[in-house]
Image 1 (cartoon, rainbow, N blue to C red):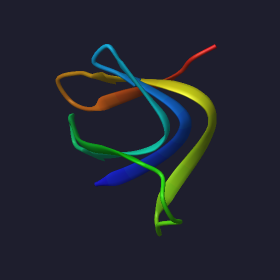
Image 2: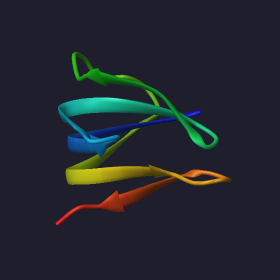
Image 3: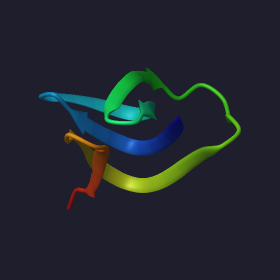
Length: 63
């Protein structure tokens, strides 16, 4: 499992501002608003789009 923190996360036609996405394999398990620093969380400055594929969840940096 991995966690990604970003200023904006685009996922399934929704926009999550300053949120943490939890990804397990090829599934986005959870997206929650950022409240406090969490261990093992990768921060990506700016906006990202999460795109599930057959094997993984692609993290695409949005412009």
